[in-house]
Image 1 (tube, rainbow, N blue to C red):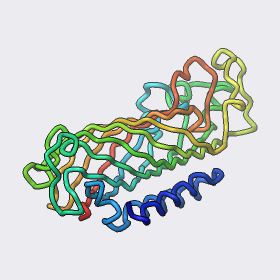
Image 2 (cartoon, rainbow, N blue to C red; image 1 turned 120 degrees about the horizontal axis):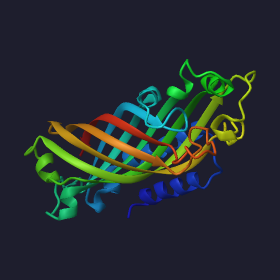
Image 3 (tube, one colour; image 1 turned 30 degrees about the vertical axis):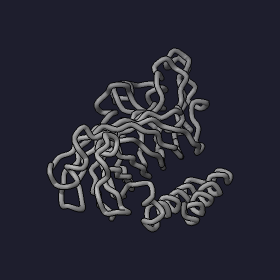
Image 4 (cartoon, rainbow, N blue to C red; image 1 turned 30 degrees about the horizontal axis):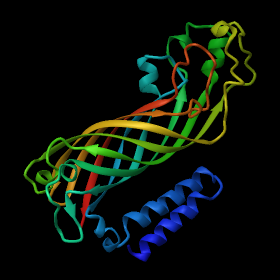
Length: 284
């Protein structure tokens, strides 16, 4: 194995062993690691028998959090943002070292490993009928004054399964290549919640169990998330594809939005739905 490869692994271990930095430092370090791994010379990776693809993705993201009313369309469409990402694929159906297709094995012809870094910042409001103008009192007034925002940086990988032949699609034998995928992302989040401090709060609201002060936490943190998606690729040129990807992602923390009320209605952690569009270029 090349000494350069050992050098990159040592660099990655050194970076990840350092104390937790801020989100800005996390972003810069992770970007540097990904760029080192993706754009290094092909001879480092050729012995593993795969080629590379890189791309960008962007699209609307709806964050389902403790802000707003459950199963409410105004909440679902109101707490949205635009997310962006940089992606990299390991394509096992084509080998960069020999500029040829691999032997016809099922895994090589139907699976790809996708790694990516994403960023999104979502503004959050309490929406729904409980904070409608006709709802009066200290509880609704306080919730209407509460404004939230969370910035999320994430990096991770997922395994994509293509039921049709990747080799046929890469060679131009088919225009469409549907896929499903699942994976895990490391999450760095930074929430911020503000409210009108001059407003009181009705202790009987939510049956007297909801303390709005202890339920807030404007502190950055880290967690993990599980994701699953379904999508399709379209062959644009011999060296590029367009992609449509529909993703659901569940966070392993309930503090991603900075709000975690101890009430019966708080039944799940934060999660999001992301419909993203992408452009993918094949490296050879």
